[in-house]
Image 1: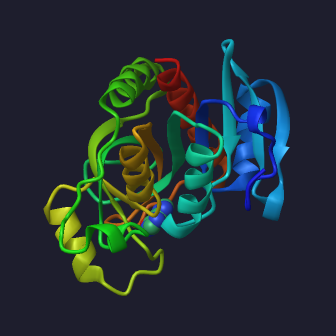
Image 2: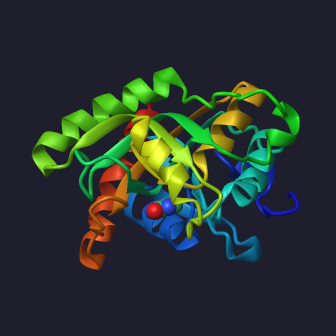
Length: 238
Ligand code: HPA
């Protein structure tokens, strides 16, 4: 048990999937895991442990934004020994060739600010995904994509601190430098994994498009989220 996670030590698996939304953690666990058991409900940030193809997996909500994710990931790594951490979440697309419902596998996560910038100060640290996980996720995504009609994109994303952004000029620079999409958590996940020698990845569904203004219709959200979770679970078997 830690400040924010009520599970006992053995209740958290070495592989952890991290959706921002605790209700998505419940839906994912009920839909994809065998024998899913509730292991955390402190502050309503639900976590479940079960198995996927015989491999033990925990799905734990991380909350929104890097400060929230940082709390859960620090405790999962330092107190529960998590080894493989995969964020599953949504993002806003920043390139015209990307469509809503496509999947983005994040190779790197640019950011202006993370809870870690007190460490790096003048250094621009480059938060980077685990190559082994990235390769496994891309393999799984490409196998799935043809049959399900989803596009798969691999590249850099932008982890912002604000959803309601007052700096459109920053987004313009991200677009200009080929950043695929914007979300709010991956940079801190990658930084913590680097610090503690763990493996991390973010697999994201495009829920909205910053250039076209398109958004995923509510009735397609569940299916898109499911595609992304399957990709993350297959990558975790690597
Ligand atoms: N901005 C930040 N985070 C997001 C967005 C966005 O447009 N869409 C989904 N997560």
